[in-house]
Figure 1 (cartoon, helix red, strand yellow):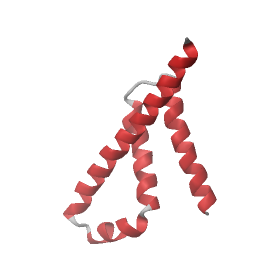
Figure 2: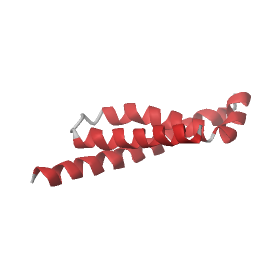
Figure 3: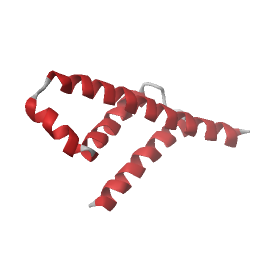
Figure 4: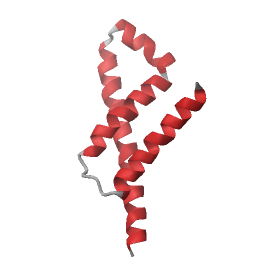
Length: 90
């Protein structure tokens, strides 16, 4: 099971780098961030489980903060892919 999670995680990272490499539009970064957020929550489910069960108002704040952080992470990998593409283009 852990190997499947690892492969999916590497696939997400590779997709973010490929998006930058293939010069996808920037609006695709927030869309991919949703998948990164879902993968993060699934990986840390033992921590998130209580928030989802209690329907605490803190849940929505935590979801927003997690989504914004994952958007920054995806954007960094997008820029890495874009930079590699520019190096190969020269």
